[in-house]
Image: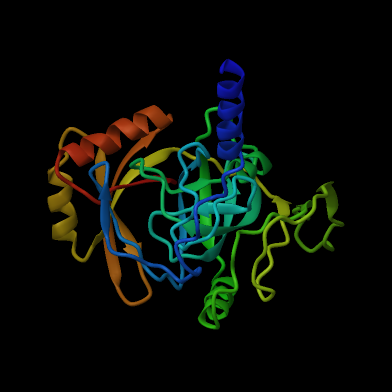
Length: 288
């Protein structure tokens, strides 16, 4: 009797171990989504033509990640992929670690991170390539590659060609002195490509070594159309060291309230939380 029970239990455990992943929720598609609030901070997804932002990056925890991303791709912790709270999905961005100067092209295919004051979250593979610190939080610049992103959106318009974010062989290329010829790429980790992507959009996995450009953190409250509005917002945070700065745009001038500087993540997070507590729901934590 006991032997039969052990055999039955072994069979159940074996079947659980071999269970297939849940079925895909649908074809991969172009996603923007409605504004949403997380941790008291409002996020406004948008179809950006131009996006260049600085802030703090974090790492996606695979144990907390869903099986499928927001645009219905299979989540892969080894992919060259990232999550953004606002960018159109999917798109291609260049992420630069401002502490080391290293840059990598990455595919944004998910929403997140949900922690206020975080600009982007990357897979563990991307974090390793970009030499994120042990704590997993680092100053970054995120810049949209408009041409590749439009190409990606065009490929999606022809049908669900994309099933997973790419895992590419990684090369590194030094940033040469002005006027010099490009340096030869050095192979770091040759690996078989796992997953597939549209033939028209392939990430080369080229790690570029540039110049470090870290800086202090500031809390920014952006998007005021007049000086009076900006000063009115500044008056709502009298306990913080704030000033108004111009924000030039292509069509008109805007103003922002800048609070800081802060020289640690903890101090920047504390100031951001104070702004949220004061009832301002769209602050950003930036590097300047």
